[in-house]
Amino acid sequence: MTPLRIALRVAGAVAAGVTVALLVLPVVALVLHTSPGALIASLAEERTLQALRLSAITSLVSLLLVVTVGAPTAVLLAGRRFRGKALLETLITLPMVLPPTVAGLGLLLAFGRAGLLGGTLSQFGVTVPFTTLAVIVAQTFVALPFFITAATSGLRAIDLRYLEAAATLRASPWHRTIRVTLPLALPSLAAGAAMGWARALGEFGATITLAGNLPGRTQTMPLAVYFALETDLDAAVALAVLLLAVSFAVLLAVRASPLHAGPAGASRPRL
Amino acid sequence: MLASIMMPPPVWCIAGAVLLTACSREQAPLDSDRVLTVFAAASLVTAFDSLGEVLERRTPDLGVRFNSAGSQQLARQLAQGAEGDVFASPDERWMRFAVERGLVEEPEVFARNRLVVIFARRPELETMQLVNLASPGLKLVLAAPEVPLGRYARESLRKLSAAPGFGPDFAARAEEGAVSLEDNARSVLAKVRLGEADAGIVYGSDVAPGDTAVRVVAIPDPFNVDVEYHIAVVKAARDTAAARGFIALVRGAEGQAILERYGFLSVPPASR
Image 1 (tube, helix red, strand yellow):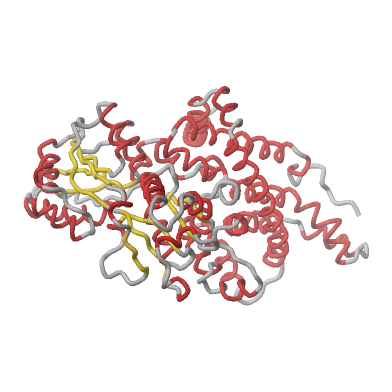
Image 2 (cartoon, each protein chain N blue to C red):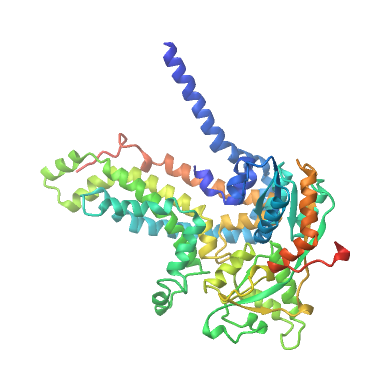
């Protein structure tokens, strides 16, 4: 090996080391701080189960909403050019830079009882603040940009020659979407969905601002961790580690599944 | 990245001193030769800003900066070795935590506070009184039982249950009907001020005199709670003299007048 190559390798190893230290060490520290006994004790508490259940339900409903409205939006953004597209794309990603509590305030001013849409919503008998619906609205709000960003770049990366080939074989537009575009885009859609779900599960600031905190109704796992910190550090860490364990299992499963196979993998379009 | 977005803010705060500044509000007049760092509970921020200015005027070579957060966060930051000179808190439990761990010297009382009930400015709420806090359908927000304000509010509600006309189950009904248990007084105030909640219980010092965005209803003394604020010199202080100077100012006549202006109750000279 040339000295330059050795130097590059060393630099790469150092960079990877810094990455691992920064991203993994805090998680390791949390896991080391707790014990299996503390985790089991935490799981035995009604409040923990309530928060886990609420987090599971709300994050999955949010994920469903995110994919339902996010996927067509991503198709629109990845497709042809139109006026104001750059503006629209920027606006869609803007929530990612908003501090979550500010996002929550914005949501409150928009969908709250006294907010912009408050009057309209109450005519339909819908009240958002302090409800489980508010938790879902907050989670969907923060997760949507993550999903759309990942899905759009995945859709853009599709080699158009596949679609052209399908068209020359007289596949209908619907057929092309289902049998060509979707399989090719699936890995990035799955990655975007996993990111969005993780973001929804960890959502804290917008939730506490829009939905408040009430065990069983709006107290999700991150809120339960926050309030446990007020009284008992060890209980809070145990709760946080539970949340980490659940997320780790799900994200690892997504990564290991065939859905996540890269573009060079098995998902070559079949007509 | 995933780990960081899945952690709620307080976990970062205690994760490392690096993040300390990210989680706290600081003013840093770094051009001064000496810097006094005051760890002050969130409810003290505005009053302490004024007190800091007074001390800086008196001692031109001294800069005063504040690290403000919940009492528990501040106490834990001190326990983790965060550099502070003074610790001030309305939460006796976390002050005791700091004393027991040998983090601070003997604390002294420097101010008192009371609870008030606030109602949102909505026509249907204009006639509401204390007894209505347990009315069905009223959107009441309380502070969570885990934070000092939440404990004080519950204590006051329990005392009100003994008042004529409130009924022995008053406190239970009010707590049962609460739509949210917030993390601090500012959040309770924000929800009522925005008109999203109907009513809340906060510290008297949280509502500025002449604030018309909410309607304030006083809780009579027998049913109120005497909240005491303690202040102490941090044992590991870099500038013990400046720390003592700040505490003397806070407990002196001028400091007490400033605290009163921000809605706190002064402490009688005998106990100072």
